[in-house]
Amino acid sequence: MTADEYLQSLISKYRASTGQGSPAYSAGNAIYPIIQQWARAQLREVRFSGSNAKGTAIRGTTDVDLFISLKDGTQETLKQLFDMLFNKMRNSGYSGARKQNVSIHVNHNGIDMDLVPAVHLGGNTEDHWLYVNKANRERTKTNVNDHVELVRNSGRVNEIIVTKIWRKNHNLDFPSFYLELAVIEALKYKRSGLAVHFLAVLDYLSNGFSSARFVDPANTTNIISDDLTYVEKRAIASQAGQSRRQQSWGSIVW
Image (cartoon, rainbow, N blue to C red):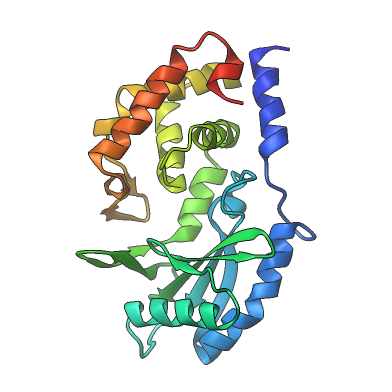
């Protein structure tokens, strides 16, 4: 088995199923009535976002990201909406619901789900305000449609999936969109095979990554690389260096 074939076999093993009839799709449909009841007339739409929509989702991580778009002109603040959705999920039987950076995490029959409430800015764009559950930050503006299109059209979906498998193998704290942007940057102008590309990703993560600045392509004032501390970035860089020095593929990613 060649290195490329080995990595392709890992992609087949880990890649999460999506689309109609998949567990993720069924979980989204099951939880939709609760969201609808919570949002009422303020609801604009609910759609799959994140790794599931980008085609980069793997098993064993969050299976579903649901983006909850509310109409502009809502009466509540972003924080109030965030807290209200959290309370709604807790009161609807999801006792394990927890607040994350911009989402509410719940588990539905074994399917991990991140619910992202957002308020549409109005007009013809898909720009939204999101509440940021962090000290000294109240909100951020972004466009998740732009995120999805950027990744889906990057030509690097397989390399991103392998990098997410590697992240899972080594239990690294590396937010998905940040990881996706890093892989795309690492492979800029590169045209070779999957294995060579993944080694290039490890080289980049071990060397230039820690000091690189990544911004949200939908809002350049939103600094994606600020989502991790320097210590957390160095942990990723250190593991990438260790993995790069391994002599067998089975010791790098599995």
